Every structure is written in structure tokens, then in C-alpha cells.
Length: 374
Image (cartoon, rainbow, N blue to C red; front, side, top):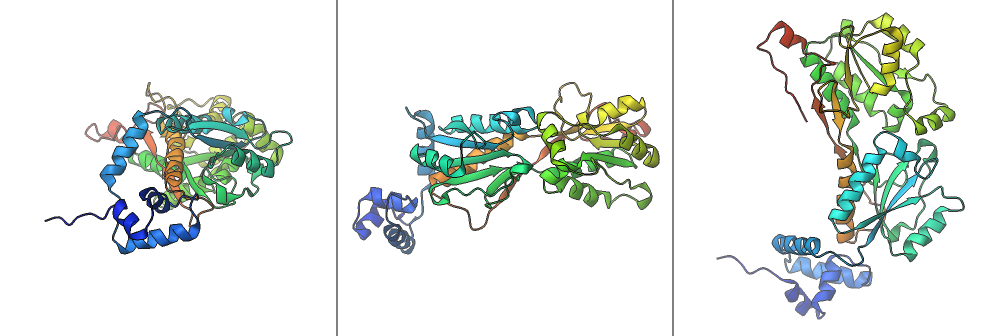
């Protein structure tokens, strides 16, 4: 026979309070004094109370099917050189789209706040958010030059960060798994029969992902015979702020002269990069893909026509997961900077394409290569 579950009502009777008070205490709601929350939480633990997952699922379902008249607002906080400059940069528009869609799905409203608004200080933004009762923050689209600590009154906020900037405070964050993405691309290229594999990446972009591009490439390149290893082409040689400001408005392209020297010295059979980085170099040198060399795009966008091989980065999923995690924190009234921040990585999806033919299939028709690998 199943033992009877301890209920909220049981804990309430034992504690001498209303069942609503127990519910608030177990959700760590700041409406109750900390002493009251701690007392009831310890009592519930001693009594063996455990939440009913089926009841929680029912409550979540009813909340979703009964839209609120005034849905709570989540703040999407950016700090780019212009209010919407981030919308012109790879990945960032998709981050926002995924976050907005998930917020609506969960019954929230997402509102954009630009930290560099003229006259807007961190203290003033903090007061605005508190006054409006906005306690859930998505920290997203912060430029490298804006890597300054956020000094909000974190006791009143729950926050999740997208990508790496700003580094302080240490918040839970969600980002694309760039290390895994470059490793996936290399494994697919090696499986397709290529030996001399070149990797071209902007040095600033590698810095912006805490060097996970270069780390992943070097990790996977260790499986390549020494004679076939080609050093990465990282451009530009330096990282002046002015250059990054230009990158904020549009994708940059690899310097043709540097690419030409690198290409002629190491003679790669395939280049892994971002299309806008290298296509101008290919055109300048008269290189045709895949006749003269194969190409893999690790920021693949057009997957329908099968022209380009590469990895699609699931940016919308990054934004959606950030909101999911934030909603969970708000549900449990978890405010402040976490003692142990966590990172959630979103994998990419591989797509075969005509730009990187499978050499093994050409030599042996019985050989196969998966059309898509997560």
C-alpha cells in the first residue's frame, strides 16, 4: 500500500499558519520574512514534504491556457554602440527572436532596455526596473568594450546571460557551443576524406567566445598527422578597438594579402570559416569551390538548397533556453548572483553540401556520411 503523501495542508497545520503561507515559504517568496521562510522550509523537510510533479504540471498547463491580462515583463538588456546595432550582427537578432517567442509562450512580455541610452546610468536603470516591478533580466548583446561589471541591486533581480559579456557578475548563462561546433566540422571533414584542413577566424570573434574556436580546432587537430596540420589563420594581427567598432555594423572579411600568403604556404584542401570572412578572398584569388578547394561554413544559414556544407548554429534555441531558465528561477524566487554560476551550451547541427564533396564516396560508392549530425 502506498504511503499517504505529506501535503501543504499538513505542513500548515503543524506550523500554525495558512496553507498560502507555506506555499510562499517553499517558493522562497520575499513577501515573507526570511526567518519565517527558513522555519517552514525546515519543518517541511522534517515532515518529508515533496512537491507533487503532476499537480505542478497541471498548474503550469492552466497558467499557459489562461492568458493573463497583464503579463509580467522580462527585461532584455543590451549594451551595444547604438540602440539596435546588435540587430545587424550575426546571431544576435536570432537570440532576441528566440527569447521573445519563448517569453510569449510562457506568459511573459519581453521588453528591450538599452544601457547606453543618453543619461541612463546603471543606478537609474536599476531604479526604473525596480519601480516597474521587473525582476527578471536577460543580459544580452554586450560589446567587448562594454565588459564592465553590472552593479545592480541583485537582491531584487534574477538574471540569465546570453554569451560571455559582461563577465561580471558571474551569472548563469546560455550560449552556442562553439568548441563543439568547430570539432563537429573537423570530424565531418576528416570523415569525408580530407587531410589538410585550414581554419580561418577573426581573432576578435575568437576572443569574444573565450577562445573556444581555437581550443576546439586545436583539440581536434591533435588527431591529424603532424605533416597535415595547418596553423589557424587568425585575423587581424591585432585587435584595435576601432576595428571591432567597424565589425559591430557589418561582418568583416579576412585581409586578402594575409589569406593569400597563408593559402599558398600551406595549401589547404578545405577551409573552415564563416562565408563572409573568406568568400571575397576566394574571389580575389580566383579560387572556385569545390573545384580548387572545399569550403565549410560554421555559421551556416541557407540549409535548404544543399549548396554549402557546414554547421547551423541554433541561435533561436539559445534565446529560448535563456528565458526558460530565467522563468524557472523566478518561479522559485531565486534572486541575486548565484553562488555557483552555470553555463548551458547549445549544440550546432551539421548539414552536408556541394561545397565539401565526400571524397570517400567518390572513391568508394559504398561509403556513407550522415546527412545531419547533432
